[in-house]
Length: 234
Image (cartoon, rainbow, N blue to C red):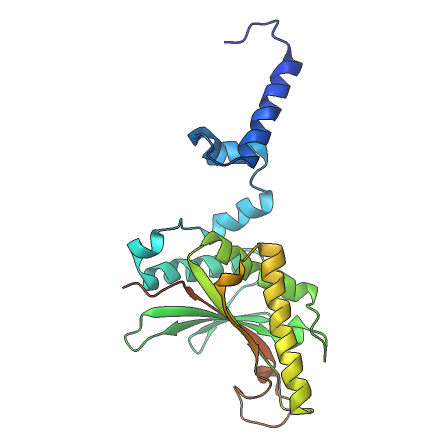
């Protein structure tokens, strides 16, 4: 118990020192790992705390316990909740969840087991026409994917850029590749997703059309992010 005349400036210094040590060293004591202390010391930002409230999270090793399908089910529910609580409500359309500028799909095997999640970002929302610079809205949507990959560390992703058929194929191919790289860089630089977790980053121009037309079709202009697990576990 502290004496009444204990100098409070010393107490504040001690608390500050404990905060710095606990936030910046490995091998932390158990109390320093508690959620309450992490919030107290500011190691968890308000943004991260709110995101985790809706996203949930799983520790390394959970994939082996749950299996791929159950692991991805938790991410799917968390992503949906996170999007909806941040102002992007979904409607169920043809088995997919469709929101403003984004679509969330389930990729299942022949036995209806969840194998990957597909996040489709509207190309007109994500990039200015003819450019590969991400819009603020695109960064907001990609942040949701980045938050999910941080919260569920046993995941990897594949990124594909797609255009419509208007214009020269070579230019569209180059643009689609540059756009997929822009998404990757956003995930790497802002969300610290390491290189090994990117299994494919490529552009396909109009080679993988959703609607078979040579016209300026909006559905064909898109960026796709597939999120799966580091391996398939049954």
